[in-house]
Length: 322
Image (cartoon, rainbow, N blue to C red; front, side, top):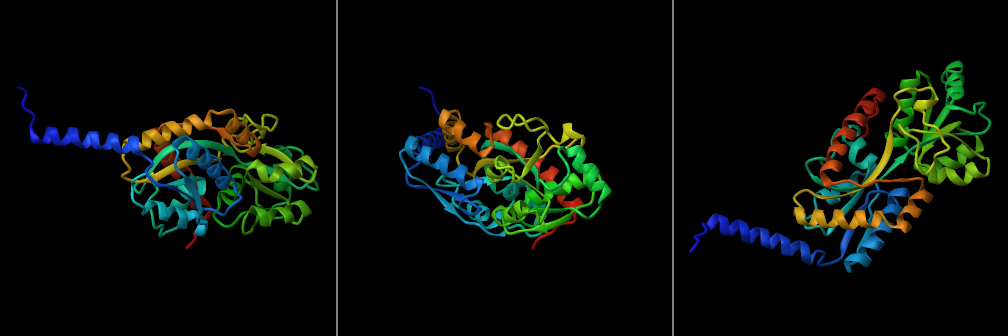
């Protein structure tokens, strides 16, 4: 007869318990926290996935919008929740990567307190200008800005947001001077951009699309290193005369640290399956998002690299928020 030691038996029982836990997951409604207001891209993506997860896993995945402090309030709620898979976060560039350097007293650690589940999309920012600006390309725009230092105004969704910092990155690489006009969100900034009271703004394509189509805004380029699959006609800023320019927004699912790996694996598998459906690919195209999928390890490594990249931009801009 084979004798098993107590530690071995305990390990086997623990593994069996975790496997059973994963099979029975979710055992109650799942709260999907979005750290931004309803109607934005993060919220739209979270709701699309939550609807499909509810159908596929036969348990409600309910979006809970908890905006405030640049995404720190909602993200902190998730970081401090029980790690049982019943509280998730759809995180983005700002809340997970940018805020680490932006807020001196961030109440959570993006790496220590959150477990990456899967990256679901990348979203190059789009540079759009008012048609009154005499520039048809990024190269022409940079030449104009150099000829008129400090005379062009750029709007953003607020101090320290990714839409502010991507413009600071352009200022640095292109060696130009522009004046920052912060607003409380993209929705507040767009009317002034369309009216020509500010000359340019970065955003994802979705808010710009109707105005570009109507000729009220001119989209010049995307910020990613390669052209976007859903915006193939727009050149990159890097290929348009500013070598090395490479910044994108992104979205992904995260959970509280300590969540059982079996649940992470199940969520990853289910979310990737949804991402590959024609319906989700069509939704991505309407939002100007590039589909993306990853393992938890790949997403975790990516988050660390993004924290370093955006941290350098934050430090160079001198932006700090309390």
